[in-house]
Length: 443
Image (tube, rainbow, N blue to C red; front, side):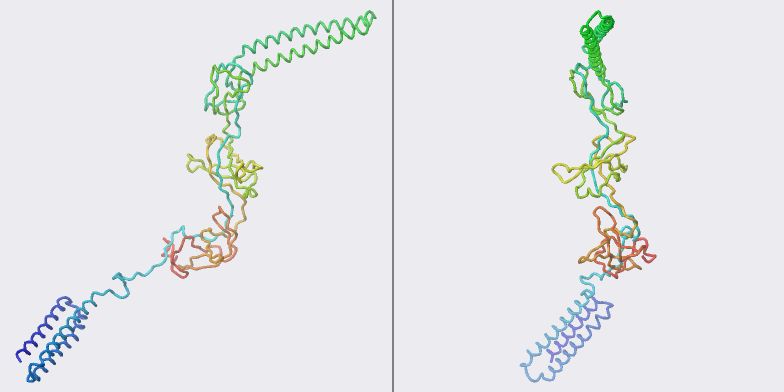
């Protein structure tokens, strides 16, 4: 009996100890005490039953003691297992928040103002990207027309000149001597002509008086004609030398700017030697290569806008002046020539321009940005924003033209509707969406 009493006391002490520990860890938690109560009650009932059985059957001998010990151990095991179960239940995360994190509910899709475009009539014009080098329309390399030693070059690169200004002079001493000789020949021919004319007049009088024969007079007439020809020849040769003397002074053929000085004083030049290069920057030409497939859309007079490095946002405008009739060798491109007014002479030869050539235009028609048009299995559709909701609408579009920002809408949309240009991600039709800054007004 004393042994059974000690066992009962141990069980009660164990129950009290477990209850005290649980209460200390879960102080103030009513749910924990509620879950432990049935376990404690079961343990006390088991302990009481064990004590009662032991008391009633104590007289049966020591052969029943092992069974009583096993019942006590089982009760303790149940208590410990219950305590761990309750503790794990308290530490477990909520089933609707995996990983212990609170569940996140997706909000409405937020769009920037640039992510939405209004359906409205627009003039759709197709443009063709182009690039090319600039060159002056009027430019020339001035060459020497005579040979000789360069006496003077009066200009340098970058210097402006006017038509007729002296650019260089070539030594004319030899040519001047030749000119003087030709002038003397002219005077001699003139004298011979005067004598021939006098003889002709005399012989005509003698022929009329029958003092000379007709043959004699005709010989005199022939000599006179020869003298006339000799005089004209001498004059022509003198003029040629005079032209050479004048050509020794080289002048600017037009108003422009010296691009390159090609000779220096003291150099010996021959006929057709280059002296200077001169350009007129007031009218420039942009030479651009265009794919042959686009040439049917290119016409003389079309406008091109382009920019040149170093000028920032300044835009230059020109018009197609000419179209080359053949492709560039080794390619399938055709060169077009765009005339550009350059009154301030800001553009220089060799500069590189990049821009667009405006092709044919249409009458104003409903259009949307090409980026807003979407395709699924060959069917075009758009996402619109209506009353704060994303709506999917099928549409019929005009042809998408490369290089054009907008595309014509033929069916499915009305003027004033708003289409979503940006990618909507995982949002679906019917999802809420708003434009930043317009949320208060209902999108």
